[in-house]
Image (cartoon, rainbow, N blue to C red; front, top):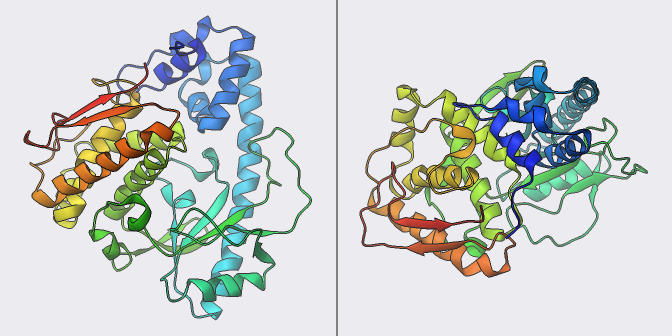
Length: 357
């Protein structure tokens, strides 16, 4: 099995929350830095690295990231303008919606939306209004490039016609935005498992404001649950997880590890089947930590209460399905379930997870 490249080890070690090792960055030559930047762009970690370890980066790397941030700031302005246009259109069409992911992650999961890559705008509409939303957006020039999509939670992505071509810049402000209209928070039919309480997310939505735009979004408790479900979805499908998503999750949990008010609310809202999200967060972070005893980016974790029966069945179902699908996945993980052991959310005692080093 190939070893982890030095530049990947240096990147992840530098971003560790509790025991950062930015000195490893000084051991990289220019060629390794070039590879680190390509990897960082793909995993959405380039800007976080520069912000956390700017003094440890070569001057040409700092200049490159400054250009990236400037481009991304222009792109975010386009995102705000486009969203405002879309929101006004949906309001006139009588379609309620909420915004998923993207700029809604600021500031809880990312301090500034200009410092994270966003390639599309994700909106959730009720199933009975999602096609009305699609038809309304068609008047703005958005259309699907194909009819079918293997992702059942949303309609095929909508795009405006354009002549844009890839020029090697992941932060290109002219890169077209896709619009995804979601009608489900979780695809039970495809996943064959899942928490039942996600249907309540819509009822608990909140109104938010970010700079000059106002929008509906998931409440903070459900937002964390949806982040976990998104990572699980990618894991089950074997499509690969963008490490930046794990970093954002770790950043949030590290900063809120002692936020008793938040975790008390989490426990109250996510009981029963949704309680399976608790150990799911832990397992995902241990996976993201590239080992069985480390968490992703060294984040602090909260200790939860024992998991109720509904949560146990959800988590067991998820990982049984994961084991079924893993032969198709390049990760080649093996998961052994031991359902007789007492499952608690503060441990992974019932899950033996074997992953590449």
